[in-house]
Image (cartoon, rainbow, N blue to C red; front, side, top):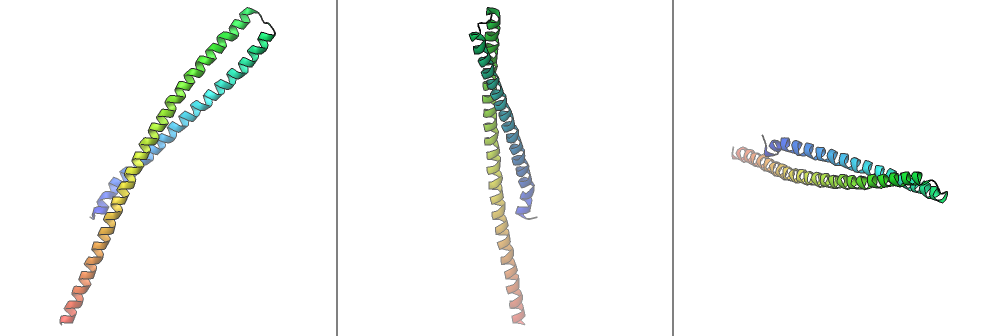
Length: 144
């Protein structure tokens, strides 16, 4: 078995690991995107609710109702802050997964290059052997 052939299982493993890392990166990006969308939805909801609150203030609603608005706005703002933290976590995880995939991609590429060089050397060696054999046959034929 040639050296290049012996590296094939290692190449398959490296390729599988790179593909797995790419899938994990994609999942992390999707989680970050979902967190971003949820944050936008909360911010949009807050903007609408603040608009309602301002209108209610102008209409001079009763204090109890105004207090309810303020409490709900405070809860929305707290939810938005939590969502921002969650988005930051998901974004950091996506970046970590991207870096992990990049490392696996580079490692597989390096292994591919090593294998390619070995295959080239083996091919050159094979050609030299064949050439020597042809030369030997000619020499023996010429000697007769």
